[in-house]
Length: 367
DNA sequence: AGCTGCAACGTTGTACACTC
DNA sequence: GAGTGTACAACGTTGCAGCT
Image (cartoon, rainbow, N blue to C red):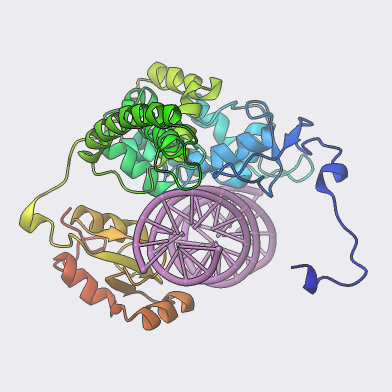
């Protein structure tokens, strides 16, 4: 917003400021084309994907986050120190790290040391053990593939059996191929208004190619249609996943997982039918904190019953679940869109959860 | 007890697909 | 082409838990 800048503000050129080098590793930086391919991204990114310590730190943090493998205890600082001390060179190296070594990790400085601690190290070890058996969706997310977040990871896991299956996925290749064919078909369409054929010969040639393209498009659409893929899984995301698994980082991750004996499974077709899917067709948005479960658990419970969970309120939203300290924006949007608000009690009743208080005092979800 | 890191959540910015 | 809906990513805030 140039109009809000002070009059004497001077232009700032980031590329010149860092001499075209990544401040973390000294590698070259560049700007990538946007996903549409029609522009250039605002952000400058370091090209040294395999060797940049700053990128590795972020990957470790992402790998350990709750929505991915949930390695409680590994956050930004621990990741930074692990990389700085060369204790790991990829997130999967965490599995080779002895607990006593992690416990002794200095999170502070040489002058003011502060160890990671035995209790935290034991928690990390237990979490890593649990992570071995987490479902495919969590592992897909943990890999940190560009453009793959929670939602996309869940979709991918529902139509693939394993990570190696995803790496060689005919589905992803078909999604990319379909986009290419559609673009080609649009450009050769003999009835195109923007680019009409100029001679009869051209028209008949284009007619021929167009009908061949249309037949192949139909064939791929039919095979993809059976899978009921959401709009989240488009050609940009599909290409991003294909690129990841063709890269050195992707194939190294697959090798390492095989070596560790980790083979997460998906595509179990766990979809329940009929009365087991009482929330089918309903979209929920959750705001605030729930007392009986975390938001992630609430979202899982909704999905297990056939419902969907979105990040923001729109007219498509069926219910806004309101916990304590709700977000003003979501409440306002729900008011505007006429979305029904649910208290935590109403939400639990809808899930069919009986308030069974266990020893921990937690409500147990019959999942 | 104080310090520090992490978890949980909300908000914001960017981008894309779809609809009208 | 504009508007709408949604996802991803990054960042800020607050409260809790472990360490010294």
